[in-house]
Length: 241
Ligand code: PXP
Image (cartoon, rainbow, N blue to C red; front, side, top):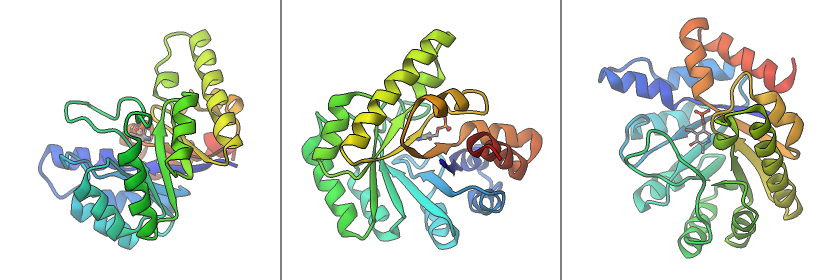
């Protein structure tokens, strides 16, 4: 059974668009949990464009389910993550000009830095450290070498496929990545662009996935249905009940 973690960054995006105090991502996280989410994800970006330090602290204090802190390898953000001790730290690439995370980490290029950061996160007591990766077998092997115990497969290209045939081919590629990661003993997560319609093919094709992180599709649907209903619907898609 795949666990559903909900990314609540876009609640903060909406709040910050009006420089308001609402809607509050901390309130959203509690509603997601009540509606059956298995965990909550947030990304404390270096430019603080959505989640703030205050949000991160309050989420750590209030989230009862699994808490996934997405972060870059910037020293000050790694320090905050170490202090907050989430259940899972997911390292992602970050570029200021991007609208959202684009593509996976280049582990081959940044081995030394990643090895150091992963060590710091474990030493702080964080039990799971994931690297966000494209389904590239060399990158997956490098993730294992630098000490990560999880990977999050980047499903953005799969989600953006132009045709059903392309989507099937990209699902197969994700499946090969998952097989290799599993053989290396890594835990497998996935996310980016997953939604109510493209999830099923993904789940039917890609083995060994323990959890998915889904944000935009759920928050966008919540505008019309309310957040609890949007989470319950996604939960039905992911778990089949
Ligand atoms: N996983 C990672 C690493 C991400 O950066 C994001 C986007 O914040 C997601 C999952 C969720 O993607 P989406 O909002 O498209 O569901």
